[in-house]
Amino acid sequence: MWTWDGKHIVITGASSGIGEWIAREVAGRGGTPIMLARSYEKLSQTATEIERDTGIVPIVFALDITDAEQVERIFQKIHTIGEIHGLINNAGFAIFEYVQDASLDQIKSMFDVNVFGAVACTKEVLPSMHRNGTGHIVFIASQAGKLATPKSSGYSATKHAILGFANSLRLELAGSGIHVSSVNPGPVRTPFFDLADQSGEYQKNVERYMLDAEDVARKTVNLFEKPKRELNLPGWMSMGTKLYQLFPGLVEAVAGKQFRKK
Image 1: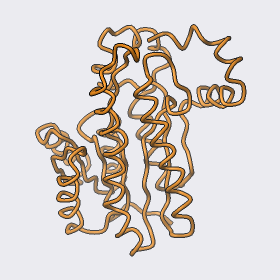
Image 2: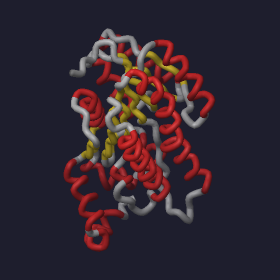
Image 3: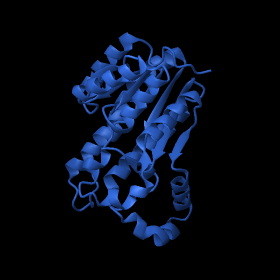
């Protein structure tokens, strides 16, 4: 039976968007969020608001998850605080661009954050979770990891990769007491699109489909209380990805125009 009292949940990318709302949700339930992001100033501001609203004092560390040495150093500090009960690999970004126009550096940067950063953080918590025989690792992936669309080649590739990593890890940890979950949201109303979609066209085209970040955070945090393999949001979009896996040619023919809204 999961109880939140005394639980430490590490959250990457916690200075804004889904990560910020996850930290607020964890604290609201009585757990202690350990908030990681590059901007210490943003983290501190949010942590102050969380303490005011909940009475819980979040723990914050500035961290660039693309720096492996820094990841190791920060997690060593976290381990001195107490047991890590959960890790939410949320940090990530996208740049929507046609392959011929995207630079190799842009694509590498997305892999460094979205994939290798998550892998590095995961490897830092696994030894202690194994020793304790308990823990929960959550990957914030994307529907884009299941259904790629034009201008999202690099981003979709990173989410395909992290889903593959999560699925393999889950099988490796079977029977260990450590849970692994993947969260696959569709478009979420966050600052994510300030960089991903600088023209604003995609946001305008999908505005009516956009998920609320607070709702995604709440459903993500629910996974600690009721673990499940995968959480797909929204449900109807998940059905679309399943149809695509079964009938890719048909879906591309019928919904191709919708895919090109970037």
